Length: 328
Image (cartoon, rainbow, N blue to C red; front, top):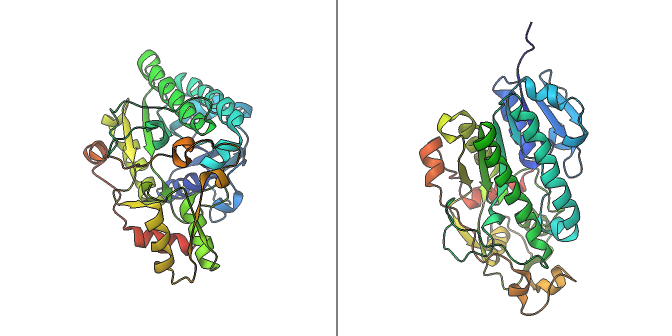
């Protein structure tokens, strides 16, 4: 008798992964989480950790002896396991490079044996130093030099993309690649330099909100619930296989204006404090401030491919995102 099918979520104890796990369970799926808890937390899964349709495996992908069996009986795999946050990337480039490719390779190899579909989450960081006003999935990618460790994450995730698409072409593995743009919301921590939860924590405590560089760099923020909705819709979309999709918000804001908006929205007595990159990332900056750190000046996604395939684009206003994130 064939066992009941399940969905695998690697990195399921992480910020985005835990929200995805809850959504899958609510839809009636059986879910297996594989997570080494290096950046994830059991607290993220507190609401569902005793759910009868959830199995949690505390392990790296490479250390999971049952991975081949799990992949054989999976109806789908969401691969979210990854290093999170520029701060952690800058401090631990070796870990990023070694873990990223190796773990993804093992997962794709297991999935390919049974043609188990995979959705691999990548990052907007792969667009690199591009000066485009909006990023399309077909754009050239301009990665900074290897002596800037902040680019190791982009290179790691880009290698994952090449590997996944190679499996799609040569092994017939159904693969979807999603480039996530600044996903935020409840449970996200500022521990690894994530800007919005860092601002919110400071504003709640009436402490200064530290804005790195000149604050003119812009981002588009996407509520985690919207990002999860996009992942679920793409997973159900047959035409998404073999393609790359941006998933992110469309409301562009400078980091300086974001800090001011957080203070205003939360009624905080905080002030904004400008911090040079040389102080924010000591030992990783030389020369003119933002140019030396290579921070991306703009990061706005084009979302036409997502809208066409999934019939959905994230639309939660930034003020609501701030309020929802602050409530967690």
